[in-house]
Amino acid sequence: MTAKQQPDDFDACWEASNVDPLLLDPALMDFSDSRRAQKLRFGGELFPADVSADPQGIRFLDHFQRDKHTREPKGIVAIDLRDLP
Image 1 (spheres, rainbow, N blue to C red):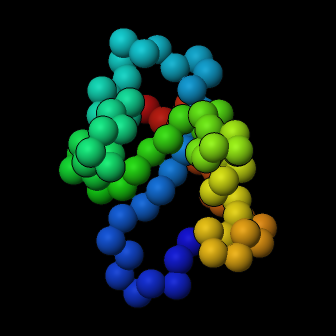
Image 2: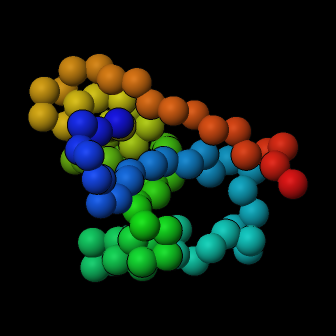
Image 3: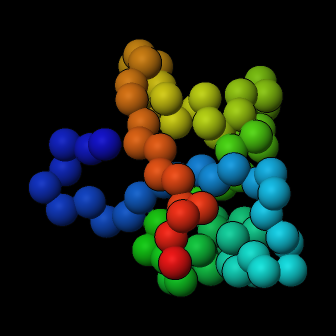
């Protein structure tokens, strides 16, 4: 969540288990050039939830549950896409 009136992008993480890598959009695994391909394709950045977000080994799932400035806990939204047509 942000307090910005007009956010210019988003950050998200996704669960990699049970994902068929052959069906995965290649942009999801392209982290080069500050994730430029992801930003162009999706308008934001998407990270595998269980991958390290920092040198301390904090997973992206946990990283996104802390305010980036204060490190205070914050909520995130979970969306289950399995039942979508």
